[in-house]
Amino acid sequence: MSTKRNTLQRQIILDTIRSHDAHLSAEELYLEIQKEHPIVGKSTVYRNLRQLVEDGVVMQKVMKGVVRYDKETGVHHHFLCDVCGKIIDVALDCEEDLCNMIKSKYGFEVKRHETEFFGTCSDCATAHKNKKN
Image 1 (cartoon, one colour):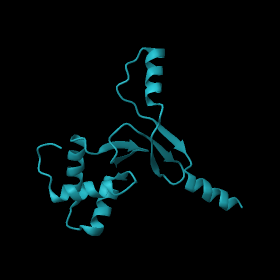
Image 2: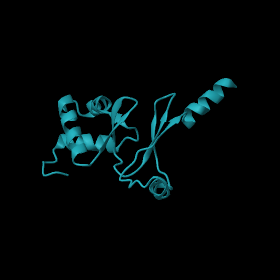
Image 3: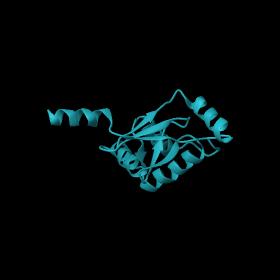
């Protein structure tokens, strides 16, 4: 992190992000924090999120037009469910092969990349299947 103090509010925000598998928006994060820490204001959440992203502690990602925050800052991808909107982290074993293929075929030097998969998550697929029966 930067040289800025790690305030109690910042730690609450970070702990809340880390305790959820979901990729929360700032508003969702604020509402979640309010359940146990009503003293933490909305502007505090937004200001600290900006700093946490700048410090590389969390990742900011726009998904379906909404800015969301991800506790995973390493290389990974996302699956977005078209039905319920759930966002799931996806790790691929072919990262290096894919980058080498791009370099070999096009001569590009890949520095970073993002991949998003869209479809129906297993929960929604099961619910749809059960609804049909």
